[in-house]
Image 1 (cartoon, one colour):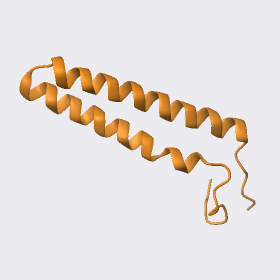
Image 2: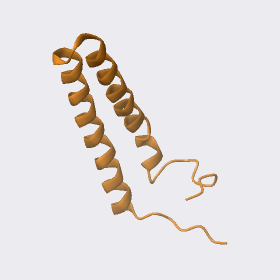
Image 3: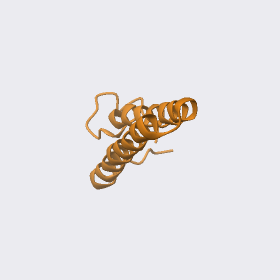
Length: 74
């Protein structure tokens, strides 16, 4: 079974969406933490911040020129 390479344009779109959605989640989480109720605002802000960090952590996986291409299975 031959593995199919993802196109450069598709990877660029996915990378852009990960970064922009992470930024929006981080902004909304910060607003919840500042302006939300004390216990619940911090919880919701923390969860949204963790989701943003997860999205940003996935950005290196969309690098089309990474060196471990032989082990990647798409």
